[in-house]
Image 1 (spheres, one colour):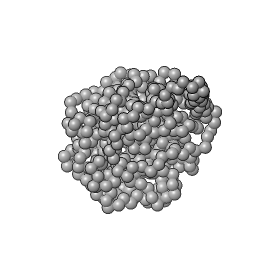
Image 2: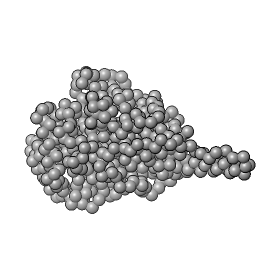
Image 3: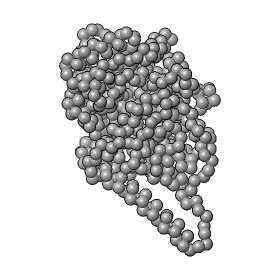
Image 4: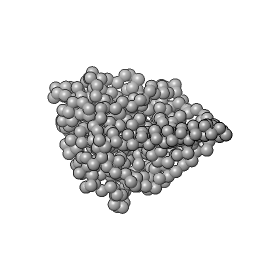
Amino acid sequence: MSRVRQLPSAKYELLSEKKRSNVWSFLGIVASVVIIILVTSFATYFSWKIMKTSHARRIVINMEEFSKNNSVQLPSWKHRLEAYGAALKQSKTGQNHTVDAQLNITSVQQKPVEGDGYKLVCYYSMPSSENSSTELMPESIDPFLCTHIIIAAASVENCSVAPSPEDTDIYKRVVALKTNNQELKVMLSIGGIATAGGFGDTVASPEQRKKFIHDLLALLTKCSLDGVDFDWEFPAWESDPSERQHFTEFLSELRQEIVKKKLELLVSVAVAAPKPIVDVAYDVPQMAQSVDFISIMTYDYHFYIWYLPVTGYNAPLYPQMGDEGYFLTLNINWSVNYWMLKGMPKEKIMIGLPTYGHTFSLLNPNNHNLRAPATGIGSVGSNGYISYDQVCWFLKNGDASVVFDGNSRVPYAFNTKDWISYENEQSLAYKAEYIVNGEFAGAMVFSLSTDDFQGHCSGGNVKFPLTRHIKLVLTDDEL
């Protein structure tokens, strides 16, 4: 991932003109302030009004070409933001929330789990270049850090998965980590969106599903992988409604073939967090019978978007006081409870924890609270995303201020116009404790590649600090 550039030293102000004695100049300044207030108020009101009163067209988030040096699979993130944003825009406050009141939106019961039967499932994004010093290579991964490593990601093209020789070499290098830790499980993530020849076409018929399963199992066996993870974003969402049933049938048939061949392979699915997508995309009770676990992508709840141009948290554990309607659902606790209500056993739920954050550019540097008006993404990071080592750089260089929100259990930082929602050891400790106290299957980390894998934050003393802290809390032991 490319390093962030030095932040400008200039201090920005909403009104930077010097006072003038001319009364007309003074009145002009007053008029400008009034106009800015009115425009900002109208934009905020209009954004909320869209959510409350209309089923809108599919939104397209303005995400320009991503940094070529960024090791994370950013194009798939772009698609997820589009889907999550569409779910936000299509939801009506006060409508289709009859189930909301039935959810426990308080903390889970404090019931500690004995032993170390947790799972720490860590996504690893394959490097785009062997020559980049800013990308995580397989040999730099601690084989004892995670219980499962999911390699992201192979793609479905022309109704098949056909990784290049370079990709399979990466698979084998990650699998080689098991030489030092034989308990480690290495899985392959297969990602995709609703495109021709992709997931939808692949699972559309029994004949095609059978062929795909045959080829997939052969690939897993050839590369000595322990299982497969499906990251289809998302079945039946703004596409063919039959995809939901086809995906359910595919998972069932895959499970049957694994049992028939007596293979010891794991099957997992990365699933959406927003209620509208969950309702459309998944037959949860049937899915629960076919998978070993699911990983709920409980992040990207808030990011800069034109019709809601205000700051917000990437992965809040709990809602804010004053949240109502659809906004009450935009937090980890609500999503997890909703998945359980839909029929997924907590013993199969992995709760997604991000190691990256989202950036915003403030309209007024003096208004830097939660839900402050924003004009776009921030100047740090990469196209609205920021890795943890870049967060550390931001905090150490300049006059950045940090606030920890006791309601949502997450921090944010700001400096002049830049505003960042991110995770630190404190926020992830709260989330790991939530997992243990709730007796869930474990934590899913996305991803090792956006954690501080080179140890920049600690001067080289601690690598993967966020993931290590999650493990520390889950195991209740020293690392």
